[in-house]
Image (cartoon, rainbow, N blue to C red; front, side, top):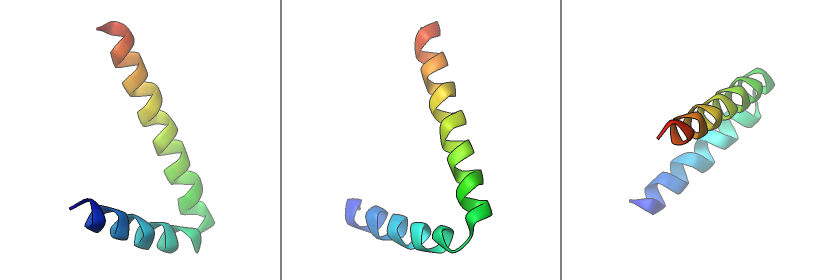
Length: 44
């Protein structure tokens, strides 16, 4: 299962690497997710 996840992640990274706008969108989404998760942890 982990191997499948890493393969799909590599494929996704390769797909995204060809599209700089997507790279920016994904980076923003990741930062938003991290800040959301850390905010949730601070509430608990």
